[in-house]
Image (cartoon, rainbow, N blue to C red; front, side, top):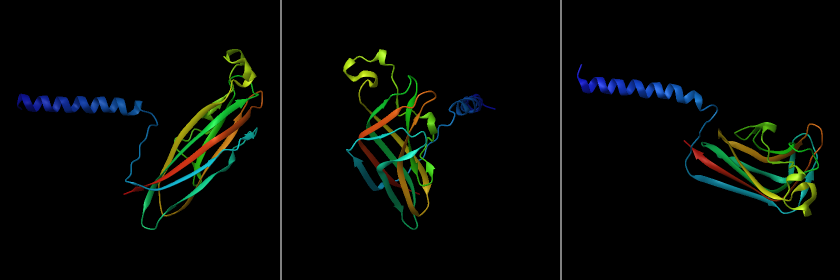
Length: 185
């Protein structure tokens, strides 16, 4: 065996070893790709809404549908942003948002592990004018799911509060939901 061949085999074994070690370390990371964006839907609202629901409920107006035509498959991408305020709970409690695509959560599907906004300790607020709510902030999230077969899929934003001892109040205003259909294969 030539020196060059031994070097190539040794390098290949080293690369395989590094990949075998690195891939499990990535965890639940996944990726999807597609072709062109072939459909865009946007819904938005500028009227403030408030919930104290401890179960997911659909944000009023934050729903649209996407249709995948016969003979196609699609990846559905969804982005949500809003002015947010999560108040009246105990510090560390939070307010959660999820995007449902079809009959499942958009990915990554974190359930109530995803804090869209959280109760802040009023002693840490820099502006005493806001009291215990520390003021409004803008927050956003991106989710995706697919590939989907032909059909019509509802995309909706759902929200709730997550409190162990208190019951936070969650208010959203000036929100936007953008949904894109990307052609796959």
